[in-house]
Length: 136
Image (cartoon, rainbow, N blue to C red; front, side):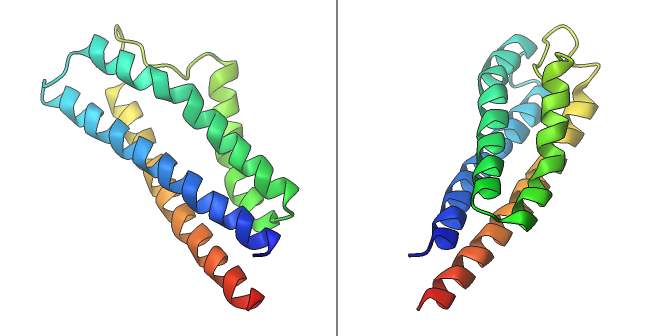
């Protein structure tokens, strides 16, 4: 198996995990909208995944960079920059006191990231299959 195939296999696995995390976010946010969960529980559950998600995505992007996968790196860099900006401005965590005021913004961000991770997953899967076919 070539290095390119290994890099994209890693991308597929990490992409699936990130996709799962975003689906979890969307489900919990929709539970808050229909009042199945209170804001404090929601923030406690989601905040434990916010930084790991951002760090894993940044690590995956650095693996693409080190592997010489320029298109995948360029595709991921805007989201890494957006996440870094949120961390630097200390706006990356969910706040239980402001969640109802910012729920629309959080929901929109979750759906955009969900779409991004879904497209990324299929791109990584395609590139992995392409690298495996080219190896044989």
